[in-house]
Structure formats: C-alpha cells, structure tokens
Image 1: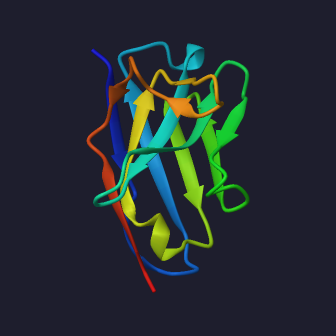
Image 2: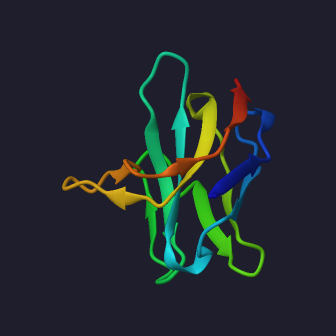
Length: 125
C-alpha cells in the first residue's frame, strides 16, 4: 500500500522559510516522480514542484521558481521542499503525491497518484 506522510508545515512570517517533508513507503521510491501540490482556500489545486527520483529531473511552477527547492533522500525514501522567501500567497495546504506526470502544457498532474494527508502552511504578512 502506497503511503505518503507530509510534515513540516506551520505559521511563518512573510520572508521566512519552511521545509516540508514527504515520507514515502509502499512503492519503489527510486523509480517514480514525486510531486508537491498545494490548495489554498477557495482556489484550485496547483502543482508546485516535482522530482524524478530516477533521473533527478526537477520541475517548478513559475510561482515558486527561485524560492523553492525540491530534493530527495533515496536512502530515507523522503522528498523535501525547502521554501524560502515565503509570501502570503503561498498560504495553502501542501500535499505530496506519487506518481506524478506532466500535461501537454507542461503542468504537473497527478491523475493516478496516491496522496498524503497534507500539511498546512500559513504565511502572515
């Protein structure tokens, strides 16, 4: 059974940093791309970042490029999302999902993915 467990969310002031973790089990971690999505109140879910654990290829949404960094520790089956220079508009529940893919437009999608329970990030202004 695929399990994804997120942690690391919290309340932070604008300009601050948080590191989210996604601990994965139940599948071959090295073979899949794992992604981070977020959903703010009243908004659609947004693909934020992903990493292909086989190739190391990463993806970032334009809204987080230059501020967020995704990484993976294959020995720990854990994916991290380092979030710096946080903005109030980053406030959302963050979810990890696996496996993820990409639409014809290059957006991150997770049509057949398993999901974690989410971790809440609140950025105060």
